[in-house]
Length: 76
Image (cartoon, rainbow, N blue to C red; front, side):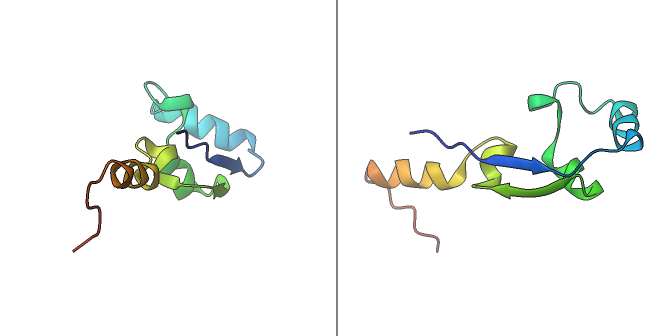
């Protein structure tokens, strides 16, 4: 099973790129961006699919897999 969300960005301006480079947070980031930072600055237009898969661990997919293996994933 694979989860493939899409992140659609708004058009970046020069000052957006300069801001991101100056933060240094691109170092060590998956795909050189951190969705939380980009959302806060308004650089992301929208996300298609599971946002948690963009951040790192696809929780919706994990719940499906665990349920398929017989684990009770119902929230209490």
